[in-house]
Image 1 (cartoon, rainbow over the protein chains, first blue to last red):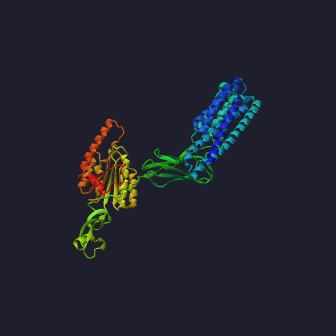
Image 2: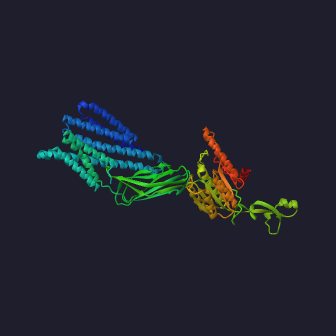
Image 3: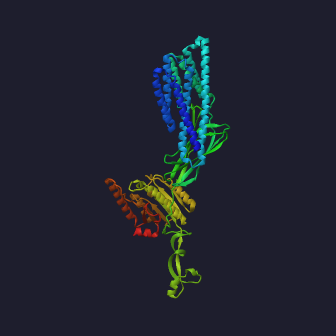
Length: 197
Length: 423
């Protein structure tokens, strides 16, 4: 049982820590005018996230993720308003990937919390104790794979961004906004079609 | 395979970024679509969803349980593929009435190639009956949870919970017809037995232990005891679960009490060597033809699991007459377990007795609750009780009857108790 609690506690701590880092990382880049509002929003999000993770309430976790995305949109729109979005683009891109990973961590933590609490009654059976432990290990393995996946997607996005910038400087035609949109839309649709096939 | 809600939200977010890029004339917003597009790419290209090929068996220990016992359900799952299957979510559906005692019926598994594993959980049921187990639902998704695959991979089973038969003590029956085998029913013929019948003069060849020494001393001639032979008989137990049992006249669950009483009586009668059959009449109708032995008890208990109170389609007199004529030898015993409500049951009992069967009738007692009951309800209960008393009086000339309470001691069926009640 100690092992079960330990892996769950570790996952909860990691989830709360990651959410806090993500919020702090976003707040640091908020413009001076809306800094206070950004801090308040982050505190609300951190509170909701902590409560959702500790109590295993998926709804609170969803609210926390929603707060993250709200904070992020506020941040990029205010940066766009000030004209500084391109300056911080790699960091902002990193923030969006961090939010995606924070969502996965919080979801895994909630799932494990629910599973452990539903199996808590069966502690008398050694065979059943092994299951939450296995689930804890599975959760960590799953998260490490997702971490690698998001990290690689960030690196690739950054690479594509740099490549796009270089191509745009070489061929000014590619700097047109409509081309970005068409490429993004077509790639998404193609990926979906590929998947359905 | 359908997209999950998560995939749709991510897709929506991507289009929000594209929309922002268009509205604000800021091409950089489209850059934020890239992480989403890449995760979609990983979902479809790298973590291709492998459809599982599993063999699943569900076992119950014990296979047949009694009321109040826990049932251990084991799911044996085997991966038939030579590759790992991860993030498999199983949910074994159980009836709402069933209580989960330990373990869980919803669990996640990762199976290595050709791995075989077992999952246990324990359930308990509120009362006897057949409770569906399953089907087992499998849900699996890709690493990012964008695609989901669901399948029902195991058919339904049922947990059969039998009614518990209590020890009632020896049941005294009197039958006009007895079988050839020794039993406990007085046969009205002389022979080996336990019940004293008469005294007669000693004849050579009589066993010495049968000599009545007191009578011999008095008469100054050897006198021996004669005993009444005890044999077995055929009994048909008719469980009446018709609407009357649901009338609200009883302060306890009379349906369950009747079922328990039937199980207990059948168990005792079979133990005493009789040939016993059961006719269950109610919303669910079934019958078990008379037979001997432990297997017959299991058949009867199995039949009793489906007993359900309510209105039956066919009339009770037709059901009873048909079965009695078909399976029961003339002048055997018919035992009615009935709330004795309504005219039909009285007519049936009288008809059965008229054609020569020995009839006994056991009825749940109607105890009035001491709690504050509304006047109209109390009046209705009194009217029902009065009607039932009239019915009881009508059956007294043709049958022995006994009111049985779930609160009284279980050994109620002795001859003396019957006699007192009849008096």
